[in-house]
Length: 465
Image (cartoon, rainbow, N blue to C red; front, side, top):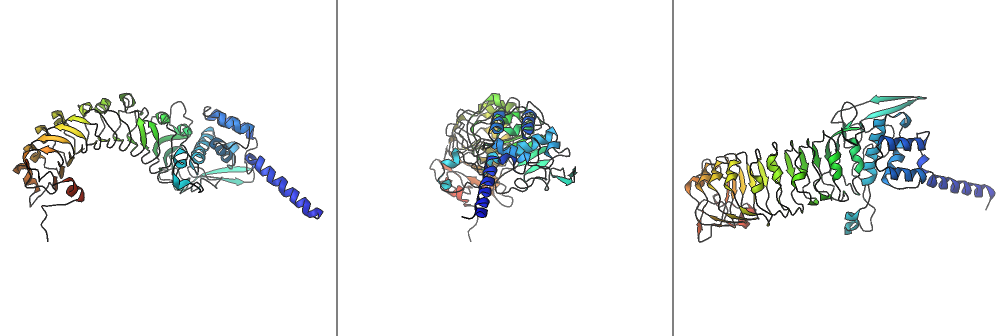
């Protein structure tokens, strides 16, 4: 081998070694890595600082915190960043490197992930390759030794910054909308650094909305306690159809929307976690494994209008709902452990417009007081153990469009005050389902006569061609 060629090979090997062992300094814009690490630790209130200290001692560390710091250090003008900017970049990069192409117990136990490269985020605009575009759409330009920041946009519909990051006029993150984006890994606790106030507030955020809907392979490591520290401006948390599990956390007093539908929560459905939720309006717990009774604290919430608790292995009865002031929709079907009667006081919940209690083990009869539910539009009571006659008072419900009663043990007749609602020219009651073929029950005006017909949308009252 010639000496020139040998020199070239030795140089390439040396360069490769430097790249591997000095990765923290590749493309770094800071002049002092150690000082920047210490600044990040201070600005972020020491949250998970051990991971950063490990990186300081071992630049080959692969924690998401070390990856986040590396990307922060590569930002144009980083040494001139404010504390809030340092916290903002670092927090968002923690989100990215904790959830982008990272395995977790969910993916490890899913055959679809065997022998493949872990999928990365579906949309990553400005997250990965830009070092001069800020999360909120701030471009940093270099004019010789002078740095100039240009604010391109700071609105809640920002399209010039990083995908899914929405900011206010002060450059604070107000919303993180990463729904349906193939996030994996484990959601990082560092998100609390974007809180408007509280023990971890840094000025980097004024967080109001966190939307992670549809990231089915994203885990929270069984811990949602960080949700309690997202600040008093947090209004909306959506983790529907994710791999989040564990206990429902203490909900903050300004939270309006809380949606964990079709996740894997197994606990936390207790009064203590709702006692401060005075502004809660929308609560969706459908499709978890909560195995608990309905918290009575829900009946004390003055703004709670929409409650969904279906398919949750609920136990007990409906008594904790007594006194609920403004509930419009209450769905708790598919809970065989939900027993007891349809209490007469349910007729005092006059704001109710939609009631779904199908596939439970409710007993007793339909109270005549249900005739007071003048806002009612749809009611599902099928597949229970209800008895007695169908009260004629239901004929007072002028807005009722859908009523299903099949697979119960009703007796007697469905009388004219109800049947008239199914007749032309108005036919306001468009679906009426019951056990038409039961020898002890007669329904001359039912549109469907068993669970199969009702599910299929059969309408016996519609003339055939």
